[in-house]
View 1 (spheres, helix red, strand yellow):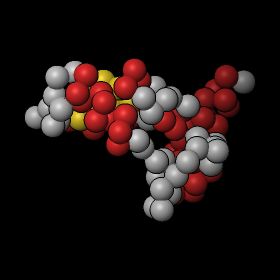
View 2 (cartoon, one colour):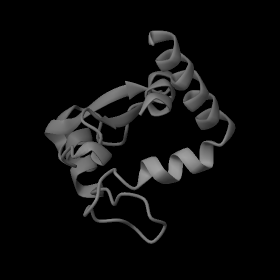
View 3 (cartoon, one colour):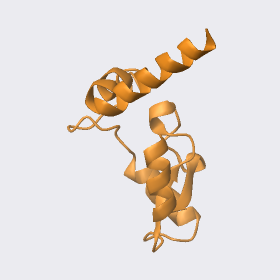
View 4 (cartoon, helix red, strand yellow):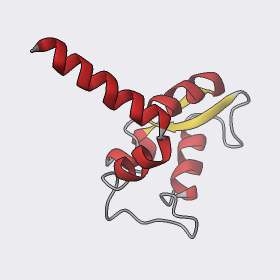
Length: 100
């Protein structure tokens, strides 16, 4: 019985990899429903909150080699406020973005 469950899981994951757009469309609809979006469908971010965070952390014009990251992602209900932001290296951001 366990073997069948493992086999079904492998088949499902293989299908998700083989048809990523179908998986993404089904998966995407459950994230961040009711959140304000821009004209491109992306979650709208507050430039004012980002500027406040940069100023509070001593880098009012950005920090070379780093990006502003949301600790709790916006798509998972995180606030677009300075208390939910952190500096993250560009390399770390690429890895985190792949996992989210």
